[in-house]
Image 1 (cartoon, rainbow, N blue to C red):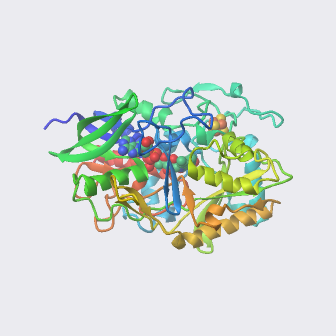
Image 2 (image 1 turned 90 degrees about the vertical axis):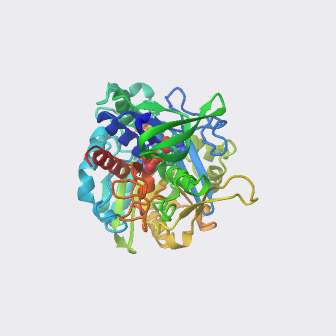
Image 3 (image 1 turned 180 degrees about the vertical axis):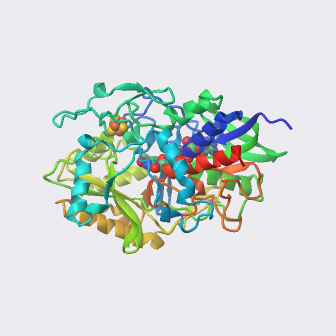
Length: 526
Ligand SMILES: Cc1cc2nc3c(=O)[nH]c(=O)nc-3n(C[C@H](O)[C@H](O)[C@H](O)COP(=O)(O)OP(=O)(O)OC[C@H]3O[C@@H](n4cnc5c(N)ncnc54)[C@H](O)[C@@H]3O)c2cc1C
Ligand code: SF4
């Protein structure tokens, strides 16, 4: 039978944008359906009262670019936009260490196999480290902490998808200026600017210095004929002939309008939560894909994320100036307490300083409100814009979360995505990270404040959800094979952070990108 498209891609983050781009380059007729909006610096939310959040229950009313989900003991932040999480990510683009693939992954996936694809992503997204002349006070602090704690050889600058101007001169006495950004045309023919240290990486870079997917892979896909449609929420997938019919709701003038389209191949790339939710719906609610593996939803991981702010009463840290993250101290080799993790210098946008100074009343999201309030109580002695170091970390947690569909507590209404997560099994990893955060703070004169969310509630918050549609050697251990093709459903793929069978321990976007490059190559040349 004839299909409307050779390929339908659901979602336009790292998995979706990259597969769409490579398969459009290979002359396939490609359609991308993305639930979020296409943003530009003119439309980025800026004030606390702007439309920041995606409301999964009523996206026709609230379709901002942060999708925050709250489950018992776990809150998850993810992007909703053309370009997925890249619009609001800190732009860290790193390879996983070779041993990350020793367990859990199919034998075909290992570091040497991914290496050429890691390199392709790095070239296409123009990754680089921060020039030495532009180190932030936080870069200098983390290096000093590593040296004073005896880990100097573990400190390293890490690669970022940010365009730096090597000739930029920073003025320590004045705030960064948009006017100092130099405009250039990138390798994909898109206009960008160079980084001037505005510190807003996690809320959208107003000079386009972040090399986000909407500046490289997506325009390149469109140049090769891909049709990228914003505000299209995919709701169901039904097998039809050798391909699939995809059902969606389009948001038009605050209303949902249903539509459908067919594709010879479909790549589900809606992210760890989005892809898992969609497939759980297809298996357990609509029954359209009944043969999906019983493993669907299992082995979900928060990638061991943890943030410990530390107060430095007599030191200027300026957490809101400069790129959010620049460097790391690497303990991925399990030399400390047999845990694999790394510590990063963190930062936050000025908006967070305002919330910390004034109280969080303008922040409408309850989890962020709780986190801000918890930190704020401990920050009475310093100006949050000056004397706070947000220590970040990722690590290999237990990866023991399970997603399933469940009715809300009042037993009415449709079943919704629910996460069973037990922090206890990850306590050793998180406590090792906290102990290291405390050590690095105290050797540099800081006072660490472990968030009450963890100390009192054993609750975590992560921007790095991984898993739900695990890659495996067979349907008994996972949902997709090493090519990302769904067991039992030829021509249906999942390709994004959902396919990770376990935590990576480092920021995952480059690995998601490498897997997407590999999958696209295997679709073109099986
Ligand atoms: C604040 C923040 C900072 C981060 N910093 C970093 C960093 O520095 N480095 C790093 O490596 N990672 C970082 N991450 C994580 C990174 O953004 C994610 O790991 C990455 O984007 C995941 O890629 P993905 O392709 O799996 O999914 P996503 O990028 O999340 O893309 C999935 C897309 O699918 C869309 N979608 C979902 N459901 C549907 C549906 N039903 N129909 C249509 N479309 C749908 C979503 O809107 C989204 O655009 C950060 C994340 C956040 C939130
Ligand atoms: S520091 Fe500012 S200018 Fe540089 S990438 Fe981040 S948001 Fe853009």
